[in-house]
Image (tube, rainbow, N blue to C red; front, top):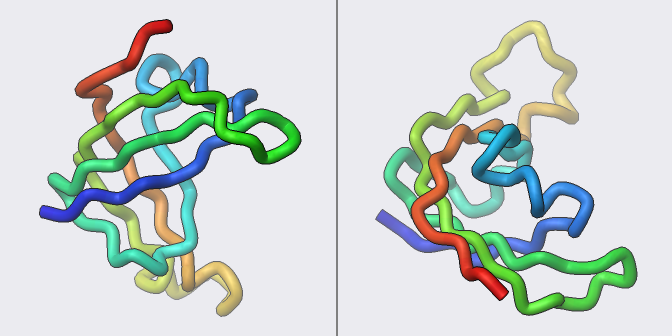
Length: 89
């Protein structure tokens, strides 16, 4: 199990772990089930707001395995997650 620190735009942060239970990401970190992801909220200027959510990956769809997709998409994955911690401010 690995831990990954990721930035997430403020417009997606609020719903992460509630109605938004997935992320589409470049698979440059080799995401796996049971990995922990720390979602760090950033504002529209790219500045860290200090708000954090911690999630656990429950499923990974590697787009490289989808033969019907164009090659450009195959570097990405979609992972499902559950919220395990939310820092309240």
